[in-house]
Every structure is written in structure tokens, then in C-alpha cells.
Picture 1 (spheres, rainbow, N blue to C red):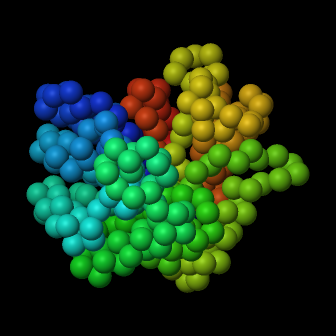
Picture 2: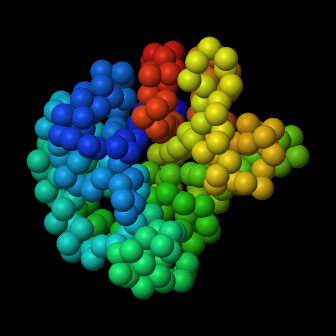
Length: 271
């Protein structure tokens, strides 16, 4: 049986308490299920910002998308996670990643580990949280084999990158999902996809400038064919997302706050 859709929205600016709480209430009113914050040097601090959002809402879940696990000692992170879980009435979902931006490690005065070390440490942090806070849902996002194996075996939610073009000749997105399912065995997982571009007006055309920043080697047509980019009318996009759920099992979609208004119309089509 297909999972019910869930919808998240990312918040990237938190200039005041009122701004955060207004954004959280707006997300809840627009039909979103989860409000997310990233974890970057120079961005809002996730835990106090999400607590502010929790205090202004009733049903909206709060999540990190995603914490750089290498920035945290497991027991200290577990203390913050437990506090936010309790103070939000159980509405916190922990998103974790292995970290990738060397300049952020340097800004934090931390050694930049190798890719293998970062993934292994992510597994260490995840094991600690799973042992000590088993009721907190864990999302792990990434794309590599080692990371996805840890995610499949320990997380509840898998964050897929969606940066691979889909064509009649190749579907690397499906291959990644097949890899996850094989690694998971009989574990039931929720599959998540972050949308990086979608139309914000009636043109049906997305602005792919952000997507191109991460995938500079792809042509415009190839960018449009990646799962993370949506095109067409509200109904077209809703049909596309139904197809993602039917074909791949992806049922949890995240957009950025600039897409929230437009995507709320899609949510209405899907519910």
C-alpha cells in the first residue's frame, strides 16, 4: 500500500522571532507537514530557531535538513534532540548528513575528515541517537553507497538527491532506490525528495539556477529531466508526484520557502 504524501518546506532566513513564527504559522496554514532548517555556518542555528517555530504552531513538525553530523558529539546532540522533542510535544524529526563543505569545517575550526571518515562518523552518531532516543524519527540524506547503506539500515527516512536525469535509456534515480531497498532488507522506509526548482507563476517553467549551481555539467534539458526539478501546471506537477510515488515509492517532498505558495496548490491537488 502506498504511503500517504507528506510535505516539508525549508526555512533559510530567521531575522527575528516574529519572522520565524510568522513563517511557521504560514507553513502550517498552507498545508505543510514539516518545517525544515539546514545546518550551515552563517545560517540560522537550527535548534533555537525550530523551538521558536514549535512555540507558534500546533501540528507542524520540525526537522533539520540536514545536520552535519561531524559538527556534533553524539551525547551532546542527543541532549538537544531530546529537549526539542519534549518541548515541541514530540514533533521533532532529526535529519542528518555527513557534511561536505570544507570551508565550513575550517570556519568551525574542525579538521576536515576524508569522505569515508565523515560517513563512518555519521553512522556513529546515528547509532547513538537510535539507542538513546528510539522514538525520534531519523532522516539521512545523501547519495553514495556507504552513506545509503547506513541510512537503509538505521534511518526511518531516506533523503534522495534527485540529481540524476531520467531518460528512456537510463534511470539512475531508480537504481539508487533499488540499492536502498536491497540494503534495508525487510525494514519499511519513507523515501524523501527535495525539490530544487519549480514554477512560481503560470508559465509552467522553473528557474533552474540553483539546481545548475550543483549540477553544472548538465544541459538545461537534462536539468529539467531530473526528479528534483518540476515543470508544468499545478495539475501536471501533482500528476508527476503521483507518478513518483507509484513508480519509485517517494511520498515525502520538500520545497524551499520561496516555492511554498505555489506548492501549496499542488498539496491541495494531492489531498
